[in-house]
Image (cartoon, rainbow, N blue to C red; front, side):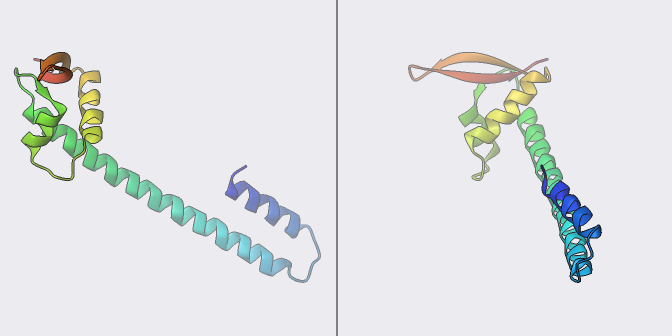
Length: 121
């Protein structure tokens, strides 16, 4: 049961009573539901901003990809953004592979097997 549903139940119960503080409680319930609406709206705005930032990063990664395989760390270095983490880059490269824009292949570097990405032409 969500908070909104709980407030609806509380409002319905108190609307049917003859308590002297009924109006005060109903006003409180309506204020809390309005606060939930504002909170949900702000969360949607923040999610949209993060999605836009992720799309911008994905576009920057797409620009870097070419015929030469490049690892996640190579992408981070090429972008030159110190706020980037391997997890952020990996998530965007995974999206590019799923969309058919990039190809993923395993390469050996320094005796280790790493995933590298190229542009799917």
